[in-house]
Image (cartoon, rainbow, N blue to C red; front, side, top):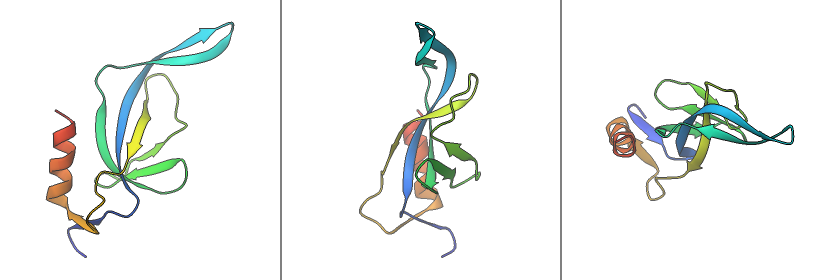
Length: 98
């Protein structure tokens, strides 16, 4: 259907930039993340990857490089509809990216 986005496997991803690694006893313990997250709507493509519904960028939940965005959270946001319009999707993203 033209102009509609299926809500099947549709997730709201919270992305944050990795600023630096935090090591303890020469082992990676954590990441320091940016304080300004960014939200996108993406389709789950497999157990670790998602593809942005608008720009087709692929996000991998194992991406952990300094200077790159990583997925901090992935959650379903539309559970009561089979499809949403592109405009509804854009409004949803805008709501979270205040």
